[in-house]
Structure formats: C-alpha cells, structure tokens
Length: 304
Picture (cartoon, rainbow, N blue to C red):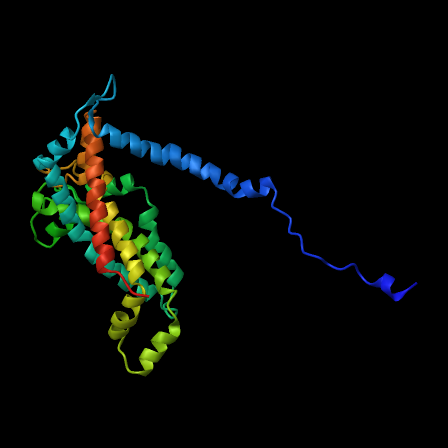
C-alpha cells in the first residue's frame, strides 16, 4: 500500500449545519405560556380598564362614553385629594422611620457574632407572613378605647384613656404602627440580602483606620446598598398608597374620613358599582405612584 493512500482527503471547507426549524422555534415555545398568560391577565385587563375609565358603566347594560368626565370629576373632588393626603401622611409616618429602623436591625443581624441570629431573623419575619385581617382584628381589640390592653396599661399608671381608633389625631399613627409592625420584617430581609453582598474586607480596613461603627455605617454600608434602599422605598410607597385592608378592618375610613386612604377610596367606587370612575381613579393613582417612584429613584440613584 502506497503512502499516499493513507493520507486523509483534503478538507475543502467546513460545512455548518443550519438549525432545524424546531430548534429555531423552541425559545418562542418556551416563553409562549408566559406571554399568553401575561396578555390575558395583564395587558388585556389594563387596556379594558383604560377604555372603561372614559365611560359611565355600572356593571350591566351598555357603557356610555363620557370622555374625560371621570377624570375631571375626580380632580375636582375633595374626597379624592383627601384620600391622597391621608396616604401621604401615612407615608411620612411609616416609610422614613421604618427604613432607618430596618437598616439598623439588618446591620445587627448581619453581625456573625450575635447569638441566636437565625431565631431573630425568623422572629422578625413572622408578622409579615401572618394574615393581615387577623392582625387587624387584634389591633382593634388591643387599641379599643374602653376595653383595650393599651388603655388598660395607661390607666394602671394613672393616665387617661386615649381614643386610638376614634379620634382623628390618633387614628393615623395607630394605622401606621400596624403597617410598620406588619411589614418591617420584609424590609429587614431585603436589606439583609444587600448587606451580605458587601465585602467584609472594607469594614476591616475602615476599622484599622480608626473609623467608628457609625462612620462605617454612613460611609460604607449606606452608599453600597443605596440601590437596595431605593427598591425598599419604592416598594413601600406602592404598599402605602394601595393600603386597603388596614383602614377597612380597623377604622372603616373614619373617624371623619381621616383614614380613608387612596386604596380605600378606590374600593368605594367599586362598592357603589361606579366602575368607570373607579377605573379613572386607579389610573390617576398609578400616575401619582409612578411620579413618586421616579422621584425616589432620582434622589437615591448611585453611580457605578
């Protein structure tokens, strides 16, 4: 056998096989269920609600086109602006203090030397997973003016009763305390996840340079978790302006509509079957919350 017979045939060009049609369609087939569900339960309801906001419809019969009538009615309605004002006051009572408190708790729980750290993490998360209606009912019992445990403690030390849920001055702080107690554990978990992404060597270097714990918190921790703080503030803003179950169960919007939040006022339109005005109210609420979220993102933005 000659030597030339053992040589391989020359390669004139590499031929790449084209992907089969099934392979080209596979990614689209995988995402098709999500797209279908999102269009059916997300896009279509939103577009239907947008169209409904320009009509006068009470759930039966034909919808009467009123154009911008629902929006002009709401923008000139004192109750609408009052509900936004109540939600804004609740935001001021809840979000700043809750964010600072949750950050301090998260910093303490991030310390590996603290004892029973896992127990404390679970304990802070228990209120968040507790059913909201059950917590609200407990709040009604504890803060009852005549038979509540809080007024009982005040009477024991010689102080008079306080109308926690029956006076305009105390109803909002009581609701704010309920919301903060219910959701602070969630905020702690989110901030704790951001803290665990910080390199521990930064704290060690700062400690060697003589930085105090407060200086390390302000100069290292806060700047490095600013994006997490932005996420927390935006999410809590959405939650506060959508607050419904707390005032509905605890105060029913009273006294004198002082706890009628934006979410509860939106429910009142639906309860009266005024669906067109309710749809317009929901879109105005979306615009308000979106504007506030953009402001917070702008204020808390960070440079890479």
